[in-house]
Image (tube, rainbow over all chains, first blue to last red; front, side):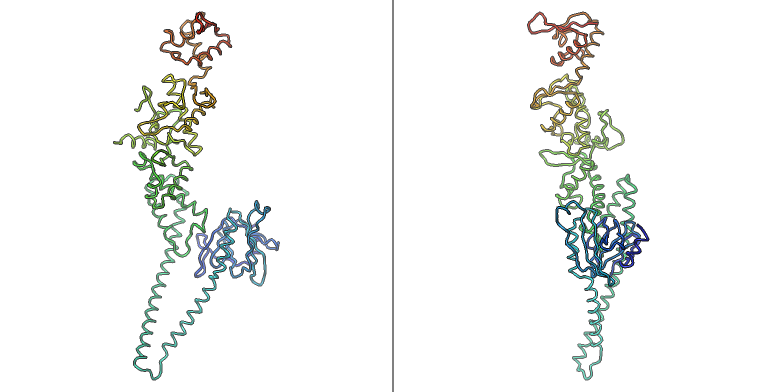
Length: 355
Length: 179
């Protein structure tokens, strides 16, 4: 299902250039609003246009961008071309079927019914709601408005600069004031442009770093704590740098959770292996303090880490505490043995030195 | 090294999560395995045959870390032993559990061996002698639970290795072993 079929679709759906990391190159002012993995793009009523299968669908403020899962190329449907977005059907019959969202598109003089098949466990109602919301905002029109407004401004500037015949000293002074304000505004805009330029560089740098970290994380699962520490800081910084198109929890869904959890789990594991924690365990408030998040969220992370076998629980009158999982380290055929060096040995050392 | 009487406790006995029933399946399985092992070892060394869930069984709590097993946890670990055939519930409410740190078959073999090594074939012993007599002092048989002993002897009887009969006093039985 490669070149032959896609060329038919490409004839009517515009292609979207991608960055080196497979992200769509956005239009000015375009912002990402929702991400859906594993989406098929069908044109059921017109069988001469074959389907695009299992791609990543990006809803932005301006377009619906469908990216091949190989990240080699992408197509877009401008939101301006969406005539109607049908709400997902609700019936017993549709309860167990893969959710579908249908759009009536009018593009390049053609009218087509496009179906998005949501195979990636996305809630179709949420997607439809977001789509309707974004379409209502009509962000692409605001760009055009802005252009019109700046044209109007330029006209106004020209008017002010024209010499007024017979002007009194006061009027001349006013004129000078306008000109000065105008100039400082221009300077300010120049600074702003420079800043925006830097911001763009930052985004590109952040992208590069993110990919580097992602690839190194999957490659080395046994890196030592030191390395993980500095990588952790880098990841924290990346997540905090939102910039032009932030990958928010809402839009990235599962992808975000996957990235976040890897980061969180290594921090939790490090925390649970500190001498104090080996002796007394980690409470949700301890974790909250170290991770810089709310205790309720910290408890959730601790429970998830427990479910993955990283930690185990200690329930007592003092409440819930979590310890690094030592059960894995103990040999049931030799319960008095202890491998050195090792986690169990570290625990024994930490707990026997207690005062 | 921490001890419970003369029994040497393993290091993980001081690990607090050891005393909390673990919800995660893999972790729970390991925990159960360790407790089964520990219960059998401890009971064997102290010649304990019966564990009462409502009694203060010393193995089920650790005052050093101030942790004790919940009733639910005790039941889970003992049930695991029962499933493996190393223990039996003595009542339907699971209040008392018979610990077979040696299975009945193992006891039967042990008795046969003991008889052979001590030249006790063709001699007659009372059941009480076997439990507390001079001949068995220092062996595993000393202090054996009477119920367990009777079952082992009956097993030997079925195999034709022993014969049980009523003794001289009204409440005691005798055993004659054959070669």
